[in-house]
Length: 106
Image (cartoon, rainbow, N blue to C red):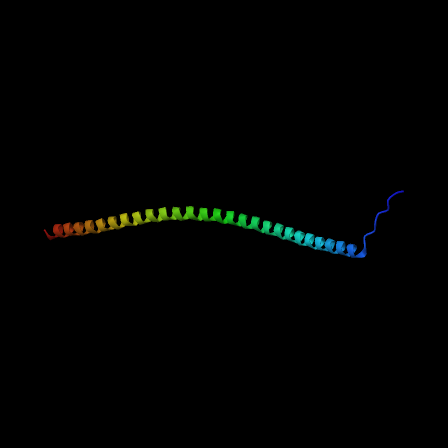
């Protein structure tokens, strides 16, 4: 004679149902965490990309700054050269005027 499956008493069925509900609740919480994790991962990737872009902009700005510093040094040297030339020219003009005065005084 074939064996008949024993039926679970209602209490055991209730307990199994509660355990299943708890498992389902845990699975939903896990699923929610996975979705949040994916969202955080996507945000992190966006932040990393932004950081890379800002790093490149920073490098470009630093190169431009160095170039401007070099140009400023060149301009400063030129200014000093022009100041020295102006001073020499002023002295030469004074000497020239003295010579003219001496020649006209004779």
